Amino acid sequence: MSDDGLSSLKRDPIKSSVVGGAAAERRRQNAVAVGKERRESLVRAKRLCRVGPSEGGSSGGDDAAIHDDQNEMMIEEEQPILETQTTSAVEALKAAVAYQGKGAVQKEVGALRELRRLLSKSEFPPVEATLKAGAIPILVQCLTFGSPDEQLLEAAWCLTNIAAGQPEETKALLPALPLLIAHLG
Image 1 (tube, helix red, strand yellow):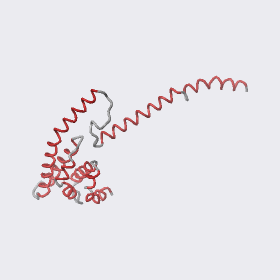
Image 2: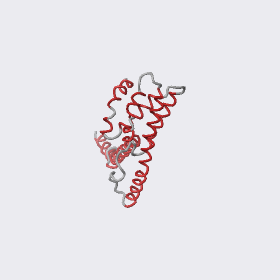
Image 3: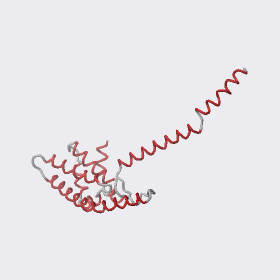
Image 4: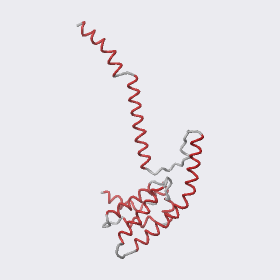
């Protein structure tokens, strides 16, 4: 019996340093933190970021402040151009939906794709310009049953990009919800 006691005493220090040591716990915590950070960055990359560069609270020093100012200036210059392009894309979509000739579906899909690209393009998508141009009723019309799958996909994608906006902008999607839910079922 005394042999069992001696062998367990000899193993315990070894086991404790390998299994329950502080270094192992730190490694586990570090691995968990890295995993969480990676997941958060992937989610942020997939979502449309609504927080401006200066509001992000970065504490990177002067270099970060200069970089933020440059980003803000680029966004301020690009935004009116993006809004104008979006308004014209909505008008093109309205014209494509009204067109009844040969290739009407392809025109609609192309116009939807262009609108979707504009809504996905920027860190600050032109959701307000899209709503002012009257895109929601047209997008709802594109979601009707019997529409081609590609058209349904593009219209739903546009609506989800709009839904990622401000709460007031998201409320404008209420007419589209029954059709979106029906397509999910």
